[in-house]
Length: 126
Image 1 (cartoon, rainbow, N blue to C red):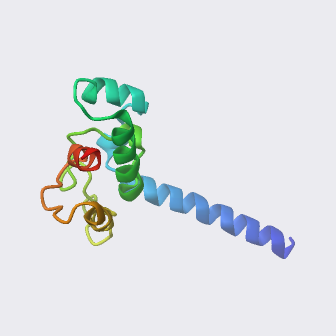
Image 2: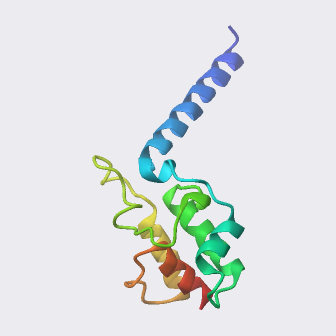
């Protein structure tokens, strides 16, 4: 086998292992949820609010990026210290929450009240 083929195989195996590892960090009850489209999330949870759909999409995208969950599987009531926390045994790993809060502090100096996905939505909307 050529050295190039060895590299391709090694990279493929590494990518698969990383994908499996990252998936294992997402709690099973969130992985098993329906992956809703953003318009469905907006209609179901925010249609009667004064919050623009763009703010909801930005917030869900931001949270999804930092905690490693598909945004369509997030729900407004998901708490960072419960539904979105690291699984047992992985608590020492960074879930992205600290980094998310740091980035949010650029917009609003006090992020102590940010506990849920909905809190991030409302922070971005204001």
